[in-house]
Length: 483
Ligand code: GLN
Image (cartoon, rainbow, N blue to C red; front, side, top):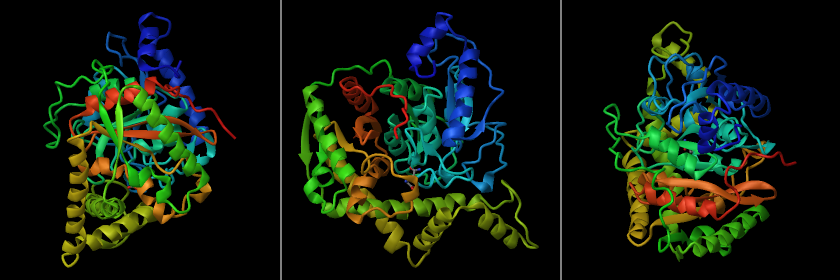
């Protein structure tokens, strides 16, 4: 049953063909299988029970929670040793909003430590493996959520996205990943990574399911001053609005094969795939045009992201001292204890980021690095917003192709491919709504395509994604092992 969509599951529940308890049991059984194969979870909630089935589409349906969402009475580690025993006394607003609809959490999904990383290899419980091919990564940081949804553990799991952490793993696992406009979903209770970029969202196997889930998660929250009132937006109800006459653009410098000297074969195919899908988009009556964006600005995306996200992370995570949360470090002074806690607690990737963050925030460096990165961020966002005056959205391929091999994960990708790999960060710079949907296969492995729109224009972005998804064959795709 767990291969079904939310609406299909709801019908089965309503007609009495299955009970919520049976669904939960099936999902738990599947969780253990996927744990064995992909190492997707930090915690499996074996005591989970079904709930009453109401007219609410989400009632009685099992789902997963990324481990950086605080859950009252349930271990919430953010996949970090620094919080390996942390059990919060409150639940994140987004999760409370969801469970009010009667859906049932069955596990907490593993991730890159505190969301920092794009490989699913840095969490304290080990590496997440891609259910399509376990020698490959899921991407990250929502690696466990992506693996579980793709493997058919349940129809949806929450994710968080600071640079691309929902949308990249969705692409690598052949599913849908939706990051709504910044502040549409409250961040209260989401472990902070880089607060000006962090966004809650969801991984599903269809655009429809993404709309249903985000409708439930969103809403203004007095506990998050960046949240806003979206009660006039009903993503699910308005999903099939006509898209004829809409206009999209793609960025020439990113998708033009001639812009790259040494294009790997799979990247070339991925870009060809993208262009073929552009023809499908046009058949839907959507205009698509090529737009040039200043190459210097595009080249600045990745470094701008590094400076801003590392600076914010360094500041946000200075509370992880081992005194108020996590295991107490050893030593005879509080400085020694703190040092011991942080030395043992964090992975080397995070420590490197803290070094960068501290450096760019130092008084002598701040203007040169941190403030300049803010300026670059503004220029990048302005360039894209300028296009949104004319276009309804930006359409681009996700990443450089299908999932990378796990044994290559330390390989620094070719410099000239960086923009292709990292451009989704534009969505976080601007707080833009952004959705990845599956776009077929390269070498038998899934690849993704992304649509990003202007702030508050989630409805429009989902309408286009829904229409495009309906014209292709990759909806509600479950991972089939390819070898
Ligand atoms: N890959 C990015 C990083 O390493 C994105 C992380 C995210 O979106 N949480 O920081």
